[in-house]
Length: 140
Image 1 (cartoon, rainbow, N blue to C red):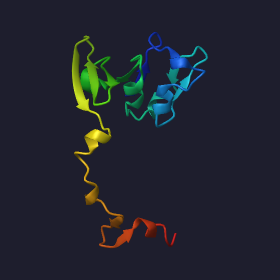
Image 2 (cartoon, rainbow, N blue to C red):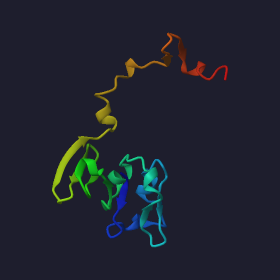
Image 3 (cartoon, rainbow, N blue to C red):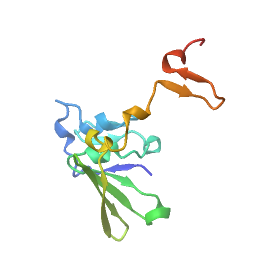
């Protein structure tokens, strides 16, 4: 897999005056700006396929190339992140598109999933030994 950056759609997002959203979002630090001001990926083999750059690109110039086994030749996935949801567009080789949404993982949506009272500062190991986070680094 890996990403494909459409050089016709990419406008550089104000580079070199500011760092680009796709560059800042990439956890692998794989996106760089070419001399023409357009984004490019260093090596697709190193891409984590996390879609962070895809969701944050304001021009929707980045897409995830899906494996041949899933969509056939030239299948892709694009996304647009919003405050409360992410809208995904999957496209197959014939140009057929399917649009679906996933809820955003933001503070308001996580309140329903995480109960802070369920967490403690103690880690239980598989051998039944409990240590607090402050004790974990002792003896190293």
